Image (cartoon, rainbow, N blue to C red; front, side, top):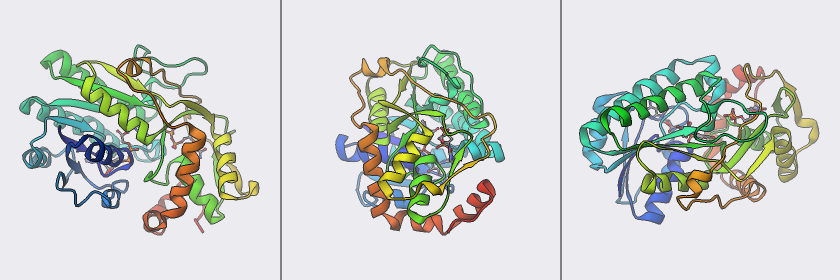
Length: 334
Ligand code: NAD
Ligand code: TYD
C-alpha cells in the first residue's frame, strides 16, 4: 500500500512507518511539522529506504498536505499528528486545538478530494476515567483534559465525514503506549532517564492511578490491522494486556535501573487527573489482532533500549526539554 503517515516523526508514527516498510513492503510518505516531539532521528534506520519519503509541514496547512499527497500519491492517510502530552495541554492548550481540530479537518478534506481511505489514531482518554470495568467502543465519550477533549472533537469530525460524505474513515483508539523512541516527558521514559541520572522520580498525587499499558509495536500492528480490514465508519479499541498502578511501574523501573527508593518524590497532583483507563479490545481481536508483548518483558527491553541509546536522548535532555522540566517540576535536571 502507499501510505501518507502524518505525525510519522513521533514515537508511535515512526514505529508504524518502520513496521510498514519492513514487514509489509508499503511505500511510506511522512508528513510532519517536527514540533519538539517530532525528530528525524526517529527515521535514522530507514531514512535511506527508497520507499520512504519525508515532507516537513503542518497538517493544518493545506499546501503542505497537497505537497505530501503529490509526493507520495497515497491510497490512504494515517493520522498520528497530534500534541500528545496532557500536562502541556493544561499549561498551553492552543496548539492542541489547532492541530486536532483544524489539522484533522484539512486532512479529511484532502482525503475526500482524492478519494483516500482515512485512519484516525486516537486514544482511550476520549472515554474519560473508569473506576471499575472496561470501556468498549459503545461507551460514552467523556474527556477530561484539553488534550482528550480536542482528540474527541477530532474523532467526531472524522465520524461526520463518514456519515455525511461517505468517506471510508476508521478510528483506532489505543491505551497508554511505551517502548523505544518515546519522548521523555511521558511517565515511563521520564522515570527511566531520571532513575539512570540519579534525579528525583516525581510521582503525581498518591501514585495509585492505573494505566493500561500497550507496547508501541502492538499498537502499530493494531492500526495496520484496522487500516487493512476495519469496516468504514467504525471505531476499534486497542488496549494492552496489562494494567499497572503508576507506583508499581516506578518501583519496577527502580529495580531495573538499580536506582534508589529515596529518589521517589510525591509531587502536586495533575489537575483533573484521570484515575484509571481500561480498554476492551474484543472488536479488533475479531479482526485477527492480539497484543504480543507483556508489560514485564516490554519494560525490561525498554529500559535496555534507553540505556543503550544515549545518542537519541542526550540532545533532548540537554536541550529545550530542560526548560520544560523546570517549568513543570520546579527543579532542574542533573
Ligand atoms: P508524539 O508526541 O511522540 O508525536 C507526535 C508527532 O506529531 C510528532 O512527530 C510531531 O512533530 C507531529 N505533529 C504535531 N503537530 C503536528 C502538526 N500540526 N502537523 C504535523 N505534524 C505534527 O506522539 P505519539 O505518542 O507518537 O502519539 C501519536 C498518536 O497516537 C497521537 O495521535 C496520540 O493522540 C495517539 N495516542 C498516543 C498514545 C500514547 O500513549 N503515546 C496512546 C494512544 C493514542
Ligand atoms: P503520562 O505518561 O503523561 O500519560 P497519560 O497522562 O496520557 O496517561 O502519565 C501516565 C501516568 O503517570 C498518569 O497517571 C500521570 C502519571 N505521571 C506521574 O505520576 N509523574 C510524571 O512525572 C508524569 C509525566 C506522569
